[in-house]
Image 1: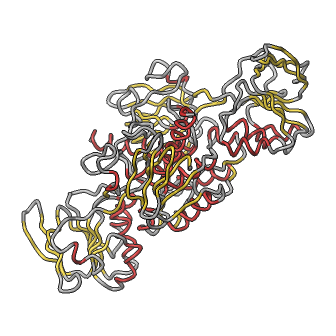
Image 2: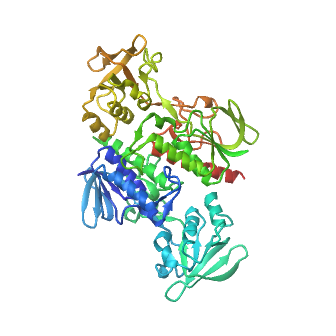
Image 3: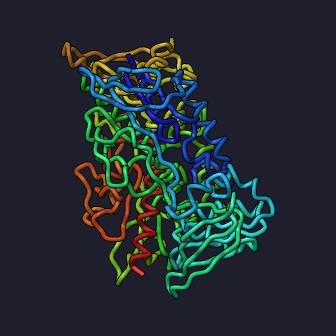
Length: 304
Length: 304
């Protein structure tokens, strides 16, 4: 029996794996897709301490993974469908296995949030995208709209100017939330235009995106904008569907923990973007991975 | 006037600087000694995510610092003697300046704790040390005692076997607190011996360390051990003396914050090892630096 299963192999799960490996806990990491989580949806990261000038997210994740590999912690590709209370332990169910385990760290992360407008779902992969790194190169010399006002929206808009003829950022507020340096970079980039105080109401096109309907929420006027791509950066939604009714989640599905990362289930801890918290950065996810590992090994010691 | 002063340039202060720089806050970092804080007292670090196989602490700090430099954030070498409430702002006093400032992040870190036994103070620098990296090379072919049972004690004991003829770890408990991989490494190292359940009662020698008196606390027996070096890793004590009576500290002097890193003074935040918390790791300090920066910029926005 494993001492501990970590669900998810993004920055939080991999750092938890690093610490659990160093604690010499018999640890298994389960990841449904591939290592990295959301950060691989971005091309690079500039604000992870230790990498002046930035690092590609692929390389950063490779480094995290190698550090875990060196400790002999297994990472297995299986999707967790449920966690259940067994007799004195937990059971972690995947499509192909049932793992009995003493303690669990949930680091299942989050995914980009849908905008929730007409035409969005049907045009995903046909011009609607949530990942500039993945889909940017498909939009050479095209006109792109970026929706959002946070760090990620501006970072990705800047990145997309490498490919697109024009990038228009549409943001529902008067000001961006993004870091000042990113705002400067975007404003100094001649490939980017800005439409503020404006929301997207519909995305449309025959087989692929052709235009969007937008609304200026101050003037209360509507208009249309021709474009071939719509990149949406409207926040995140946690991948916690498999936990429903099993532990305390908030209304949006984020896991509620105390400050030591304990969930409402004894011996189950959560860290990273699946957790209700203030700041969703890679450095915070890593830190919480270490904290969850520490809490889990302490729990195991006390349980003995 | 600066928007923000960060007191301390260890991992927490430098990451706060990185984030404040990216927020484009007019930021000054004040550091009394040199960048790095406590981590430069260790030679290397293996558990900072992103560096498989480990990295020297000097290089890691250089990387943190370069990332801050690239953003144009100033790091100035001045010791803060007090923070005071001014009219609508704070005043940060150093030996040579008084800086008015809107908000403050305290990241002043901690220093190694004294053991508090007879002979310790007088023999500092004469065989008593708190820094294996600094002083290890002075003990070639000597007999060294390492006092402590945490990660740092074992890491440093392993490091000291590079120089010493023999390293004896003395720990007051039956078991080490250190991570399992470190315990294995230490136990497999033929240069290291172990004396458990034992405390050091006195360090003595004419002009330099010659021997220590120890006591087995189970058998209640006393004995002496000849040695030329005593390396003490008995925890940390925060560098918060200049804050006494100004904000809430716990009994040991660690700063009490809420989970958003607010101190008892409005607009003053704290992060890293100077703070009362569960886990004192570099990755946590960095994460808290980012969180404190986020909280400070939010405070400045709301104050506007």
